[in-house]
Amino acid sequence: MAVKVLVVDDSGFFRRRVSEILSADPEIKVVGTATNGREAIDQALALKPDVITMDYEMPMMDGITAVRNIMQRCPTPVLMFSSLTHEGARVTLDALDAGAVDYLPKNFEDISRNPEKVKAMLCEKVHTIARSNRRFSTFSPPAAPTAAAPAPRSAAPAPATRPAAAPAAPAAGSAAPKRKAYRLVAIGTSTGGPVALQRVLTQLPANFPAPIVLIQHMPAAFTKAFAERLDKLCRISVKEAEDGDLLRPGLALLAPGGKQMMVDPRGAVRILPGDERLNYKPCVDITFGSAAKSFNDKVLAVVLTGMGADGREGARLLKQGGAQVWAQDEASCVIYGMPMAVVKANLADAVYSLDDIGRHLAEVCV
Image 1 (cartoon, rainbow, N blue to C red):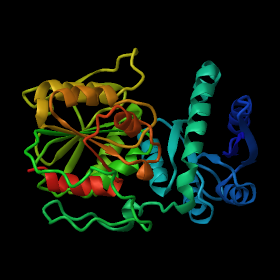
Image 2 (image 1 turned 30 degrees about the horizontal axis):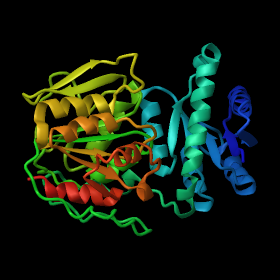
Image 3 (image 1 turned 90 degrees about the vertical axis):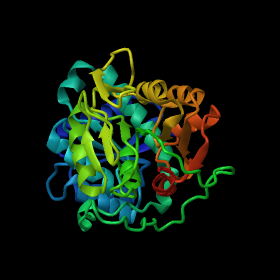
């Protein structure tokens, strides 16, 4: 059965072009279009699409407000279009908090110059997030980050807030882990990762005893804004990694978009140019592999939601050195791709729900 898509954008050109690209895929059907957020809500209720593509800046009602309303009234996977700017990143992160599943850069030049590449990317995203639709019958968006001021970094951690629906029980054999003095916690993720990382990292206390590195598939223009956002919300410190940064307890370093991040045995971070031969920049496998070489069994790696299998080969290297690897469970993933690849390869020491991961990290690291 074809994936039913509602296209929302105030630009007539962009609406038509996105509709044409999607309609060229025999397994996708554009069932309607809308020119603003209010129309989008009405069309979503009437047409019940499987996926909605959504612009942010529109008359009558902006995209974020529309996403929030849609998630309350008829939860549907939303793919946001965003500009590759710092402000575009901020808006996109707000949209993800409101309930959007994923995003694509809105670049008119790319549509004109590389139509086949854009078509493949857009259609792949639509098919992928359509498969996440099973989660949306009980969707409950995270609280907006501006709803309450974050606790001071010197304060004791507040109890973790549970979602309305009870989290899935951990897989068999995934009991609470043993405490250990890790030299590094490495977390890799992709689709659904911004919200997942926020939920994990906000559970950590200011005096978290291990350094953290974060690898999130994200454009170069987005990572600085994302690191700033996390830093405001978390008790630990978060910053976009720079070449030469030193790993230290209570600091999370986010790999910059478009580049690769490695760690060395001295506890320093290396930022390298993105290799065009690699699909992901940053790449979880690259960072995990360097952590395995530098710190052997003193690494705790976590693979969160995301499509594809990035992180699996890095996890294999980590396991060979005696490191611990955790994977997010299927029930709490937006896309159960990256964690599934690790689990299917028998590389996961434990499988936890998203809300349990942050709690266990706070308990296990000494």
